[in-house]
Length: 453
Image (cartoon, rainbow, N blue to C red; front, side, top):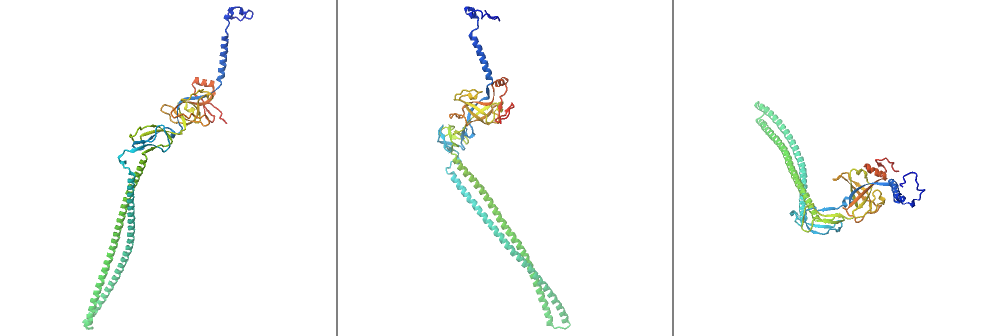
């Protein structure tokens, strides 16, 4: 019996007496399977309402948080020849410790006492500058003395000119007086001559009047000569005044010319002195570059220039170092479509290469063996591979990162975003929608959400 009718007879017949009933009845396994299916369906429906943490998964690598703590290469400031190594690879050195010693390879720096000899040149040029300064000072004193002497000479010649003018005036007065005396004597002589012809005076009186005229004419001539001499002396005084002024002006101009020439020579010497001082300081600094020292506490990772006797070019790498005590970080790379979902302070989980972990990306609290960090910095420029670099620093209040981590190691990064129901995440994945993301103030971009108080 197939027992497909609605009118069953199983309750009226003892089915255990017949084999056909046992073979056609449904087995207990089928009933158990139905219960399992129902249970799984109920569990699946319940799981759809479980919270799920949206995330972005990407790859990264271990680096340092600050640029001065990252591996770097020490270069040679000058060209030289490797003479001695003071360290070995893997050694910890302190800041200022000597790493390698270089010797000079350029011929212009071979002199071992180059700094001292340059100092002697500096001292000689300084003496020359001092001599020029003294000469300038002497010329300035000479110019002042000539200007003072010119002032006195000017007063003296002006007095001489005034005396010459007074003498010319006095002699001109004497000449006028002599002319008047001559006119009087001539008039008296004419009257005496008329009176002598009439016999009114004797010959002696007439001759006296004649002699008086000659004496007066002589005095007039003498006064005229004195007047002419006084005028010539006045002209000579004027010429002497101009000559002296021009002479002293030429002397002062020559002294000033010598002064400016000396100043020019002093400036040239000072320029030469400055150049020599620069060269001396450069030589002194260069002698300090023979020893390449550690810029900070670090580990010697690799010697780029091996052995002793090799030549190092100026600016060539010599050794690579890893700063000691560096604060580690992870640089992760995200696609441009995921960049807006990440902001400063976001939580990120890591799986470091070499440390086993069991990860539930949607339930970070169930994850085992992962380490946490927060976004510290984000690049504003896209990289050559079309991704953006994000720097993640360790959090101080959570499990510390492994002390054996070294820069350059790999890491799997899981950036945690918003918490949503599992059914919503499945629906988002099926439709290809981007994840929801949040800001610290509580605002969700893409979905309206009331800010947290």
